[in-house]
Length: 122
Image (cartoon, rainbow, N blue to C red; front, side, top):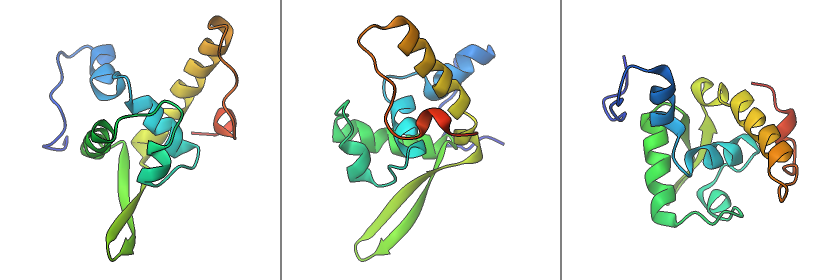
C-alpha cells in the first residue's frame, strides 16, 4: 500500500509514474549524493549543483514519503538525522549509472563522477 503522503500519479503509464517519483530537477542528484556517501543535510546542500535549502528540505521530505530514502537520527540534542537509501532508492542506482554513461557519451563538458558512484552495485 503506498504511503498516504506520496504524490498521486498522473496516469497508469509506468514511465509517467516513475517520472512522478524522480523526474524533477533535483531528486536523482540527491539520490546520487546519498548513494555516494553524503548522508547529512549539510553535505548534500554543499554539492556542486547548489540546491536551494528550501527545495532540499522539501525534496528530502517527499523522498521519504515516496519511500526512496529513510531518515536515521545520529544525534539527539538537537535532533539531527542522516539519510540512507531504502531498497526502493537503491534500485535506482543502475538507472543513475546509465544516465551518467549517457551524459559522458553525449555531453562534451561532462566528466566521470568522482568517488565510487559508477561502481556501486544495486
